[in-house]
Image (tube, rainbow, N blue to C red; front, side, top):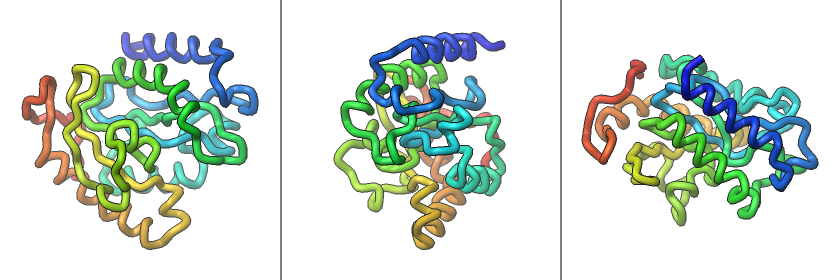
Length: 207
């Protein structure tokens, strides 16, 4: 087990003991995160749905199947990235997470990001996008890389539509596919390493 995985396991244990988390009472499972703790690429969604709450794993329902298809499209295995959400218990009736809820889980999400230390963060939906790009519309920035400095770290943030939005709207689904197809090129054109220095950083091959 890697040192990062040990740190993530400890963080998860802390969350499971935290009775102050606002969505804990109505949820079945803590949906922490899954994937490679040493990943260069972190995918961040909004909140767990029904199936995620049942299984304790993010993106395992219909939206997760679409995400798997998108990853397959760019020849990236799900096990090679890390996947999480901005809130880690299911909001009632799959409603949008509220600002106080995002803030409550945010202290743990920040630690998760710090441990994984990704070089690229793909935000899925407007709530995860707003963590790094507040005050913008996803319809205007989807698929476009943004170099972000965050807590003395530098990484690339690429906002994407949430896969669930693609399942509801054929136009958004087609655009999301196009954005993923262009992901490799856009990341390669906008590399960000530590301290904002340009470098070749993706260990996986995006084609």
